[in-house]
Amino acid sequence: MAQNITVIGTGYVGLVSAVGLADFGNMVTGVDIDAHKVERLSRGEEIIYEHGLRDYLHRNLASGRLKFSTDIRGSVAASDIVFIAVGTPESDDGSADLRYIARAIEDIAAALTEFTVVVTKSTVPVGTNRWIGDEIRKHAPDADFSVVSNPEFLREGKAVQDFFHPDRLVIGFEEGTEQGDRARELMEDVYRALYLIETPIVWCSLETAELIKYASNAFLATKITFINQMANLAEACGADIHAVAKTMGMDGRISPKFLHPGPGYGGSCFPKDTKAVVSTGNRFGVQMSLIEEVIRANERQKELTADKLKRMLGDPAGKTVAVLGLAFKAETDDVRDSPAITVVGMLRTWGATVRAHDPEAIENFSTLFTDGVSYHENEFEALKGADALVILTEWNAYRNLDLEKARSLMRGTVILDSRNALDPDEARTLGFTYKGVGR
Ligand SMILES: NC(=O)c1ccc[n+]([C@@H]2O[C@H](COP(=O)([O-])OP(=O)(O)OC[C@H]3O[C@@H](n4cnc5c(N)ncnc54)[C@H](O)[C@@H]3O)[C@@H](O)[C@H]2O)c1
Image 1 (tube, rainbow, N blue to C red):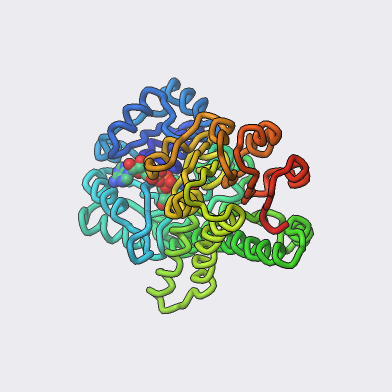
Image 2: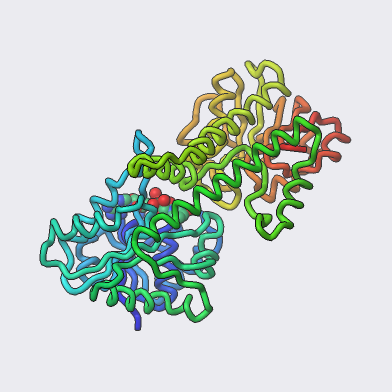
């Protein structure tokens, strides 16, 4: 049966979820405190870059199953299920900042009428869903509701595909209560389309669901950091990290995914979620020393990238560096905690001028750096007159970079390829001083 759903927050997770849940046949309202976003979305403008999103957005707006609004309370009052998908950024002390969640809960509590399932999609520390239940009861003692933890695992850049074909769904609910059972039934209904394609659904407690999300992200961040350190070692001792990683990945216990060396992980999730795991550990008196070291090693990896370029280039003061790739990874416009922020920042501190290009992320990145950084509409414009080229994001367009043309446009011959996107032999044959990572 189609459900009436409100999704609070129309960012990467909320927007993709709203569009996807509407496509499953539900009646969905995406609500946000940002009136400008709501206005643009209502007109069918995609406010983020995600492959495939536009078609789904238009189709579901046209069908009348999807709409956007700033009237959070009105929408919640008319819903059977409310998904919370607001941001949970990092606080100064590393813990997750729950202020947006708190504000959403206030609105929910003020608007609950009939039995409603309150689902947290945002990534929140262990214990938060119980706290959400307590807070709602505090504001609205008579409210009839149940809390569900449904953490999201979609990857930016592949968010639409991941929403419709997730590896698994994790649904934590209030086991052993009548309301919990009703919530489970409604959640089964909402995700029927995924159940029908045999998506594994893990039903568990609220705390287990919350920890599954953090454990998964902390593990992936650890895997990336592991291969980055191995790449540094491979480079120092003359081994080839690609052969090492590929062969490691042939071992079924290891898997080849997330074994690509680079300038360090970034984005809106791994950096803040690893810190939040450490903070949760402190709260429960458990030292998360492995994750603490992952966080430190990842920061070092970003700085090492800039240091390596400095060694290749000599004193960067007065030099011009072409930076290709500003997003934290390919296929997204997200620059949150991107390695490019560290590298461009260090280059500017050392007195270099930066000519930057990214296929999607210039708008977001240009709010962070203006002085001494120019932004260009294509990679060749960025390369003009550069003493060095550094590749920071693995966009496909950079893998196929016309190196002969690059050679003719650049003043210098230094290439630092922090994603191993280029062919080292071709670069060297053309007279470039080329370095990749771990090979
Ligand atoms: N981005 C990802 O790849 C990803 C993946 C999995 C999980 N997550 C988690 O999902 C959550 C959301 O992440 P995101 O990247 O979509 O965030 P985002 O910053 O892109 O979007 C959050 C949206 O919520 C809105 N908002 C904030 N407070 C609100 C309120 N009280 N009422 C209504 N709207 C409100 C903001 O205006 C914004 O549009 C976070 O907890 C994040 O950790 C993100």
